[in-house]
Image (cartoon, rainbow, N blue to C red; front, side):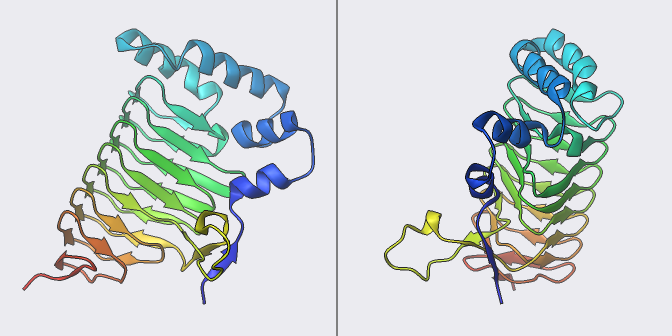
Length: 241
């Protein structure tokens, strides 16, 4: 049975405390005022900087607000970082301009492995569990990766532009309430294996397990598990004969 709950953002906005306390919890978690000051300072002066100067300054500044920033990491301009103390970035990772790395208060951790590439304006949204991206994996531009109960992507995998891994859905049982306002549903953790090729504009639903060396053709919808070595296509995705 699908698990239902209100979204992390709804829980945050409806909880007790002042607006300032809620904002602080949302952007830096359990950090204090010093951590909040560093976050605001870096957001104001460091994150918007473009070019090699901006990359160099962010390399120096991000360890102050992010749990781990590896060696020779490149972080583009105008990225959004929330709850940085739950974010781990491995050596030689490349994060392009406008990427969002967002760990909600209920999320555990976001791990970006060594030599991972995250394309511009992609969004990694950890509402719960852990998002773990393995070494040498390439996430395209304008992608969206979500997790309510966790997401794992293996090493040496590729995700095409404008693809989406849905960490959860919304119930639609009520006919007199907009779907976006209805409780979240989640079928469980999503697992994607090693050496997986995901085409452009692919959607992968929550709770799906995808094996190693799988190829998913562009514009496919994956709503069921896929075994090792399979090539799939379509809506919903089926094996290509």
